[in-house]
Each structure stands twice: as C-alpha cells, then as structure tokens.
Image 1 (spheres, one colour):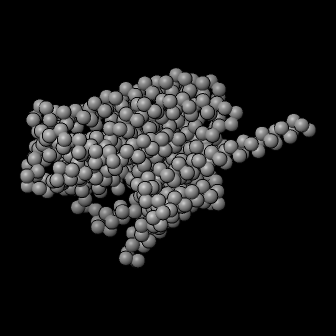
Image 2: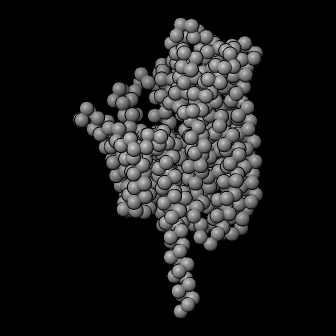
Image 3: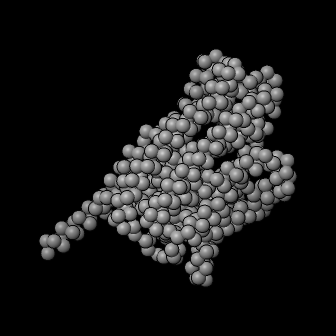
Length: 251
Length: 237
C-alpha cells in the first residue's frame, strides 16, 4: 500500500458486507465473553484474600470504599467509553478497557497508524489496522511494564541521568502536539482551530469557575459539545445538499 | 513496604499471572481475528502489517515510559505484584494510586500506618479493582448496540459517523492541549515544538520521497517535544 496516497483506498461492497456482519458479530462475541471473564478474574484475588486467607474487614468498609470511588468516577464510567468508540472502534475499545491506558497509549497509537495509512476508523481497513496496532501496543506495554517492575527500581532508573528523567514530565504534552499534527496536516490550521474552539470555551468556563460541577468532566463536556456542534454542521450541510439537489432537479 | 503488603503480594502472584495472561489472550484473539479478515480480503500486505506493528511498538514506548515513572512510585506503596496486576489491567498507574488511596482513606488509614494490616490492604486492592469494573460492564452492555448503530448510520446516503469521529477527537485533543498547555510554560513549549516537528517530518517525508520516515513521525515529534520542554524548563526555571 502506498503510504503517500492522498485519497484513502475504498473497501468494496463485499468487504464491507462481510465486515459489518460476520466480522463485527464475532468481535462482540470475543469482546463480551472476554470482558465477562476479565470481570470475574479481576475480583478473584480479593475473594481469595477475604474468604480463603481470612483477611476480613467489615462489609461496611467495602461499601464505604466503593461509595467514595463511585461518587468520584460515576460520570467517567458512563461517558468515557462512548467518547473513545468513534476514534478506535469496537475491538480496540474492548482491548483498551481491559489492558488500560486508553487515552495515553491506545488512542495515540491508533491515530498514528490511521494517519500514516490514511484510513478512517469508519471503514473496514481502518478498523483492521487499528485493531492490529492496539493489540501490538498491548504486548509492548506489558513487556515494558514487566521489565520496569522487575528491574526498574534497581537497574533502569539509576542508569538514566536526572535530566532525562525530568524530560519524562513532558511526554504527555509532546504526545498532544503529535496528535494535533495529524489533524492539522489533514485539515489545515484554520479548520483544526475552528474545531478546537468548543473545547476552549468549556476550558474557560471551568477555569473561570462559572460551572464548578463541570470541573471533573472537562474532557467529556468538551467532547460532547464538539460532537453536538459537529451534528448541527452535519444537519446543515445535509439541508444545503438536499436543497441544491432539489434545485438541480427543478431545472 | 510493610510486612503485610509484602505478604499479600506473594499470595496473589498466581492470580496476577492469570489476569495478565488473559490480557494477552484477549489481544491475541482479536489480533488473529483481524489478521484472518485481512488475509481473506487482501487488505494489507505482510510488509504493511510488519510496518504497522513497528509503528505501534515505537508509538507505545514513549507514552508507556512516562506511565512507568508513575509505576515506579506505585511499587514501594502497593508492592510489585499488585502494581503489575493493576497497571496491566485498565492500568493507568496514577488512576490506580488514587483509587488505592481513596479506599484506604475511607477506613481512616494510610499506607504508611504501622497497623496497616493484610485486611486493610485487601480493601485497597478492592478499591482499585472496583474502580475499573464498571468499564467492563459498560462495554458488555453498550459496545455491540453502539457498533450496530454505527454500521446502520454508515450505510445511509449521508453518514454522521465520520463527523462524529472527528468531533470526538477534536473535543478530546483540544481540551487536553489546553489543560496540559496551561499548566506551565515548558508544557506549552513542548506542545508547540512537538506539533511543529511532526508537521516538519511529514513535509520532509513527502518532499524527500522517503515515505518510511512518516512512520517515525510520532516518535521523532515526541523526542523533540520532550527536549524542547526540558530546555525551556532549564531556561525559564
């Protein structure tokens, strides 16, 4: 595949049909069953410690901890997966919410390959590519994690100069710059800036203290407002296209 | 790390291994499924897929290393096994640290307390696990209907889905950029340097007819951004 192609290759109807039926159905069979098993497996150590080893605290302690955490994250639990779905697709979403680091690792990796290969997540090509990239990122991340957990404290960190360790503070901003470049190179500076404006507005509202209840949902609110504006633009463009079509037929 | 935390870490080692092993199993099953579809329809060549794997691996290392710095701060608090288990499953190290602390504080304790027992640490692990569990239930319930709705919408004469993807991405990046950029001058400098570098690499790749250079866009931009950020920090203070 030519990576410099300006126009994305189009999947033929047979590929799309197979993707939307057999492939997609199996993705959800895999996703749902593995997530259900993952759910059970993740609670297994606690059940073992509580029932087998007898490390018991009153149930009310567990309820208090759960209530504190729920009050803090309930909004994120509901909104977050919806926000990443249109960016990485179903299979990658299942993997991301099991292996973790969705925002910091999976989304940037997905956007990077989509940009290089000039594919949209809405196409079978985009979904296949993103799934492969996210699966590889899961392996690499776990490998790094294993190395760091085993030898990080004693070998890896002492080897790195202080200035290098300090530079790791700037990983996230540098990631943001790289992600922004994908949209800037595709749409240009002005169009990119235009679509960032809703986020700017939400940010200002939160920083100015005008809506304190939004402070914990800044990212989600920004995404929601931007998507709503995108929907309004989509409807308006549709209306204009229909009107132009009707006028063309009238002539 | 207290005796109680060390003991619990040893006890749950097999469970951690099973859980992390299952993360690998899930990724492999999805990978095989995607590769089969690719082979059936010849969407990408083997060479393309190798390049995708390379880009993904390189793109993972930078952000993963930043998470590892937090991982290293988590190990002395909850132990290596719990760190590996929790950071490998919905594992953002800072998220896990926060949840462990919330759970422990709800008992009126802290990790450094001399009377921090195995039972208290079990509650801390429960806190970390409980914070991730709703995401799993969420996906079991909503991912399929969402996907089917997306497929249905994409089959319409005009589809909102491409604009939905774009809107979600721009809403997320825009806010994230402002949040991070406004935190400090070096952060702002990092974003700008990284953005300019990424655009520069793209232009050079196109003009010099070296398409492979494009695969390194994110890695090069991130290294340049980090260097720019650190220099700004040293200059500005």
